[in-house]
Image 1 (cartoon, rainbow, N blue to C red):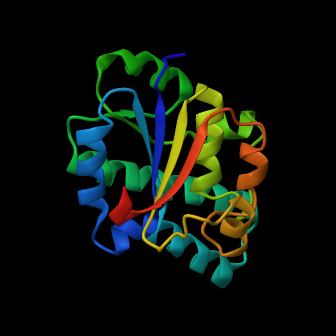
Image 2: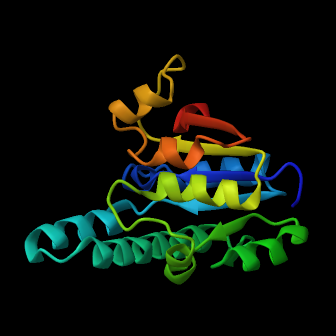
Image 3: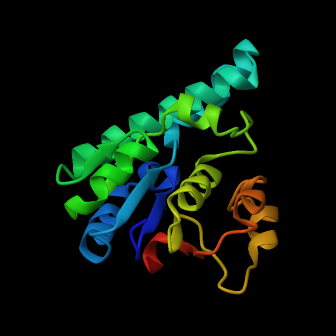
Length: 187
């Protein structure tokens, strides 16, 4: 796999807070080559949560709908940075890496199901970004959040405080890449 590969996950709250575009601009300026951008689900995923509460459908359906929310965010991100390449699978990402353009991941539900990724709200786009970083043998995973992140917080603190999902430690326990969870203003 390509050395120097970074997976950068843009929290859904960046879209709600109006800072998504500026974070994408920073990523394009500083991490252009060898980066794969992962969208959060944002308000699209929140609508899935609300619909599940109202209609009481199962977690498998909610998981698939939340992945569609990430795909919608990927399209939004691409509309803001047309110089990026959209990729739906690991094979697509690998094919695009040599182009020198940032890649926006639009996750494929079938690929994630085949990989055994659980269909649960404990697995959010943070864990999916970690899964992608492990699968691509990335050198670094950066999670960009709207919330203020204490530089002294360890992974367990981040889970307890709700900055990353409950499944995240399991997806990163054997990771050989650097993990950074940063506030949008410190990115």
